Image (cartoon, rainbow, N blue to C red; front, top):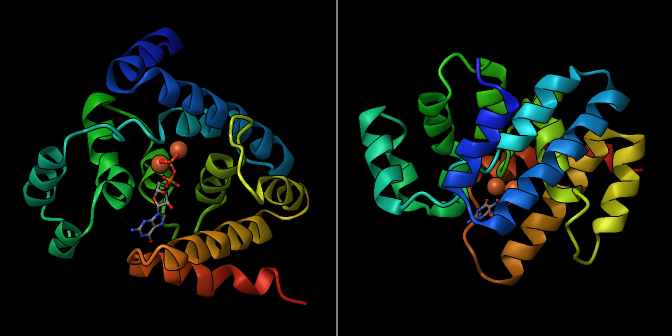
Length: 189
Ligand code: GDP
Ligand code: FE
Ligand code: FE
């Protein structure tokens, strides 16, 4: 496998300085959540570090990957926000041979979630939202919720994202709605 230095070097070559710092923040937050919720810390940290590895790939690369790996052709109707996770995991797999499938899966769903998330999926999804470098309205509440329930934190983040997208009249990927419906009960009553 790759040393941490090799991984950092490869990541640095793929993303801007700002995005690189965000990835380090997600690595740390994911490690802390893994400790709290009994997941493997090293695995969670690596998934957090690499979650946005494909964020700055050109659209043409994502479109080619969708064809090459025969992913759902509907993906072509979306954009970078959806592609960097739902398609980007294939780039991570290509550049890091032997990487654990559960890490690829967590990267795949890190933006839109899914109706059936593993603990690692939830950790990366939530860590991405609450890492120390994030500063937006609601992030403090998200951090507080993440201290008491990982499922409630998934629900809160998804609800806020759906709200944000709808307010801007941006299309919502159906899997995001699935995540909302599967987890929102953890915030009710
Ligand atoms: P980032 O990569 O660290 O910036 O964070 P994410 O991967 O979580 O999200 C990237 C962008 O995708 C954000 O602007 C989200 O609001 C947006 N996003 C999340 N869910 C959806 C969705 O269902 N549809 C669309 N179009 N965008 C989404
Ligand atoms: Fe992302
Ligand atoms: Fe991110």
